[in-house]
Length: 520
Image 1 (cartoon, rainbow, N blue to C red):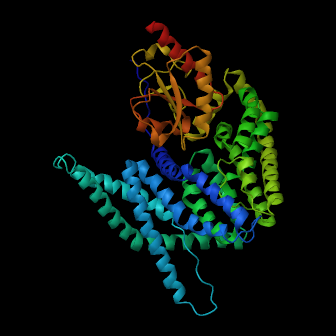
Image 2 (image 1 turned 90 degrees about the vertical axis):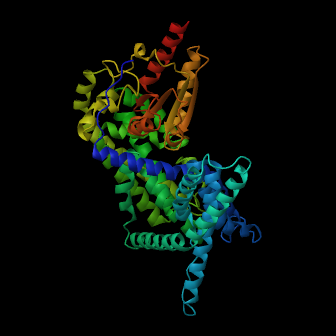
Image 3 (image 1 turned 180 degrees about the vertical axis):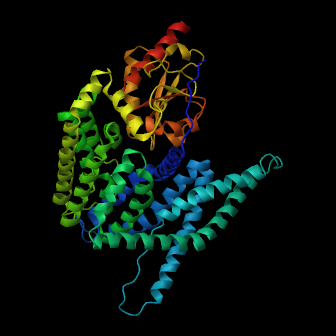
């Protein structure tokens, strides 16, 4: 079997992959628990004192929900990712220790205050859960490895139960003292930093970091590691938080896609309207990332739009009660705080408008050069990827064809003849959370395979962290392929620039059909 050459990963690429992996793990802990956050948001919307239908009895659920249930759910999920149910249970025990330790620190601090001084509120252990989950699960896994195969027959259950219980006790003590102290300090510092940004009207500057990070799939570390925990803590005290809107605002993305709809060329213009609908109403922001990567200067339009949206919300009081996930206009409006609808809606409209106008100017200025590039190739996205490679210093082999066991054709596509040694029966679409863009891509390819009359091939979507050796062929967005290859080095890897409409899908169908014909 012919093998495609894989260029050495640069230092910058290794850093990017490392940050992406860290963000993916944070996302893996938070995203499955978004339904719990939504439920908490509904409780606050209806039953707290300033809610739509205040109810003192039902409002008592709000505090324990955010202080105990949500951090423990996050810890269990994180531990389960690392070491299954056993890791999840130990992580949950450890987080309970951190919660109790934090409460004691807050009580001791408040006891030192003079009468009339503002007391410190509860610190919710979301960051504590994110620290303790992998720490507890990995150490439990390591301890189990020490006596693996050395336990006398008949005593396995006894050893397993007591070892997990004892180690859970130890990690709860660790959570109670150093972790609770550390997280209280971190949350205090981050909270003061946000207050400083708000006080000096500098919060819009966060878009300079957030918008480029989104395009390069680095946003999860910022969003789930910092913004979500801070936003939840702020919402617990004030009923809402502007921090939930810093990353979730769909305005900049839809503004960019509308600019391509009216002023783009070739395949980008043809696919932009559908992408805009999916991004704005479906909340899958990944669909606009390839359009920005086609012409990296367009990131300036996204930054300007993001800053416009944040500024609007700051001036008019726009905020959400809980995280909006996915970042759909429907989810944003569902979580909008009472009395903030005008501000939130206006922030989306204005951010989209600013991004649209700046993107239009950029596209217009480079239109002649883009048309010349389009005339030289049948694939506008392929030309754009080549330009992006030149700007980023990345080899084209990262952006097309197959990885880990297939060769690429002269045009960067797939050569089915090279794949006869590995039968493709299980195709996996993978993205950060395994829910948004990968689910959409899996649906598109599943329909294509069904239309081709192929019945014994499964197409599923997963998070990159959940990839396993059962995958025969893995499809990822080109910025994520390196990480997917590390998880499943023996699988065939296909890089696409756009989950919604990629020519690689037809090539995969042709590949599988050719295998079936050869087998028949």
